[in-house]
Length: 145
Image 1: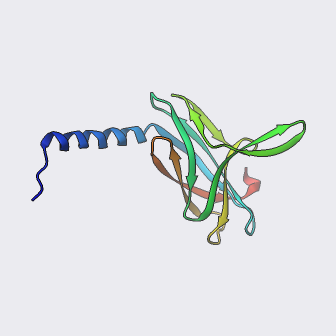
Image 2: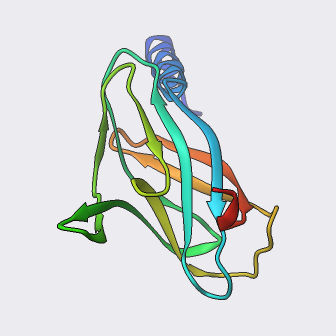
Image 3: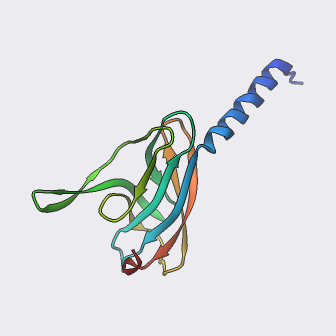
């Protein structure tokens, strides 16, 4: 029979509670998925806020509905629009970053199933401290953005 030290169990409980509290430091608002026809990539837009007292860093995302999800930033340079990958996005305490057309966004590629306007897709945001935050995105028309 296994025996556990009460101090160990108490410490593990405190660790679990502190990690749950840390997860509440990130807020996601207005998540939507710009849905294009066929197999064209979709774009994920949302507002990401660090409401905690410590910095946080978004390092990626994934979704069971898409084979690949990448973080990008749209840029304009010498009149030419392009996108560049963003491997890490730092959020200072109290900072909010908008993922919106013409700026930061998630590129969702290799759609694994048909989607229609109004469908919901879960995308899990990944942070450098190991946090994984599932967010439900609603598919919207590009004309609505």
